[in-house]
Length: 188
Image (cartoon, rainbow, N blue to C red; front, side, top):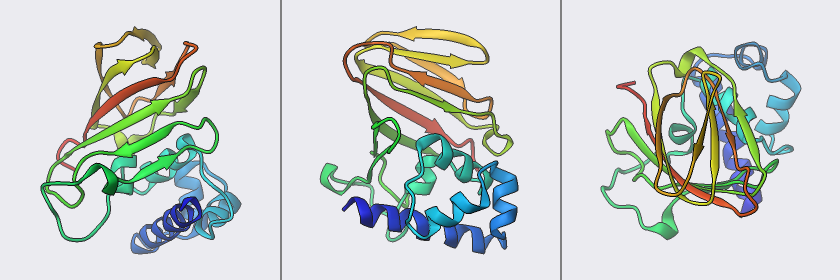
């Protein structure tokens, strides 16, 4: 199943790159990810980390949620067992796309299980400007850094922030954190 997802990720990146008439070099320059790494990901020879995949997606004009959204017939309901799940190979964080795919909504809902002591940095990226997100913590602890301000979240807390300015997710606790990201693409 994991190998199938890696192949699907590679195919999706290559398809989107070609649809935008981008060469590997073009995408490398736009994303800050090496041409060789993008090529390895497209051939399913490497698993992108969350931060790396986010940079590639931003260069393609997509959020991670939009990238993982399946194409096809829209349905207002998606069952849990049908929701797309992806694990970051670097930190082990588990990302579940909760929103029904193919709908006309600019909002994506994502559930995340974030391991203890894990840290993921998402650098600023112009293509994500105008996008916002709510981070709603259910279990554990979460430390969010946005615009050089550090926020400590406890269960039940919710943080609103822009996406394009870059941010850092960090779990300073000894237990996994579980939270929801409500991403608004802002009419994109």
